[in-house]
Image 1 (tube, rainbow over the protein chains, first blue to last red):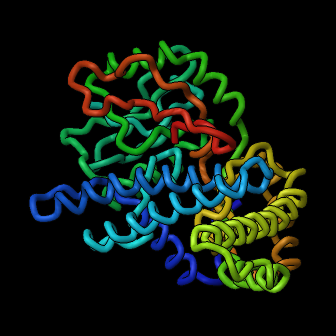
Image 2 (cartoon, rainbow over the protein chains, first blue to last red):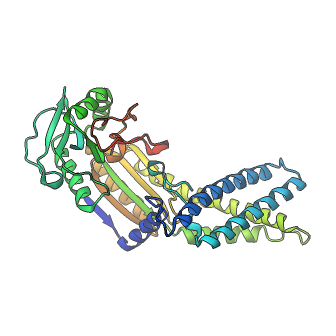
Length: 111
Length: 268
């Protein structure tokens, strides 16, 4: 059987794969000019990961009915403030939502 | 230094002359009834360049014509032939198991793009209209925030269920033709599936036809189909307990790490 690479939409696949590639830096860009941004990206990615995990856990508990109204209020306020703070820091370092990811090689993306 | 391309099910000298990286002649480093297809290399490869990657692939392809191949990860280099033989000796049982498992098997790649953005928007709209009025006027910002997040969470779950439905449909069609799979779902919202399938050489035509059947039933999706390839994504070799190229080797990670879940473990 002869090798085939077939697609009806080569451009579409190129775009999609490039999009994924863009979110997967192979190295941390740590030259003197943007070392701060590189570090901020790394730290904020980890903070965002923790925020998402907290959010997921909280939503699961709310859905399961194990939180009181008061606790839901507290959780909501905490998550909201955390999200606002991350948004603010992203703005300061010129980072976009899609920048907050790390390629873990064979394990795939962090988020 | 010794650049390695693949392990094969023979320790014999290769029957044809093949040029590897930098034009170097390919030869086999034997151990019992297996061999490491290699060539000498006089430089350290720092970044994967197109020419080198394609040459690595070409060598594996040509060798695959005659032997069972366990492709090595690009840029697997040993300091000396003795280092390479040491790996063959220490990992012999694993190499043999993989060779037996992958004999007469090839790999196919399938990528599917679906209108994910549009589908998710549709789900979100439907969810919004079904929960309209659930927000109370006296809600605090924190409560409104939680309700929004819950709605997003529900939308995402419904979106993933929708994706799963199509992937299951594909796999139920292909299941008789495939031996193993490694599939990643929703790598992006539009990339529904990025999968590799291990298929017996005798079932390759069936696999192709079954895939065409799915395509006809899902004409609104976009597809990228490739293969047959050497089984790059299906070789399972455990991480060695210590670096295998201690003496002068440039690649401490002579064998690639384990991979989790249904993505399997791979040398390739």
